[in-house]
Image 1 (tube, rainbow, N blue to C red):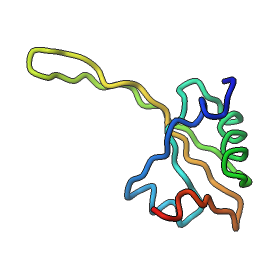
Image 2 (tube, helix red, strand yellow; image 1 turned 90 degrees about the vertical axis):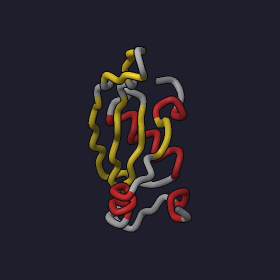
Image 3 (cartoon, rainbow, N blue to C red; image 1 turned 45 degrees about the vertical axis):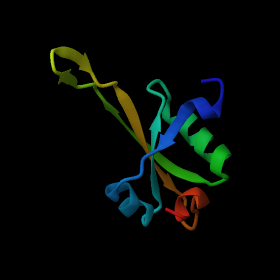
Length: 95
């Protein structure tokens, strides 16, 4: 990845991710070929925080139908970033 904005695509805002924020864990959709090291560097540079760990999960696309048309949902990758104690991402605090 050339740019940190290519690594992190968007945050995931759901009930489960909001519950994890209380534990200092933030969830993002990331580029499918991004490594844990690249994700760590991108989060630290974008939000000016210290990252303790990065956990990732890959999701395959599922087959879908709309009438007679068939297709697939896109494959994607999720990253759960755990911050160092006392660190917060201000972007998420208003949500």
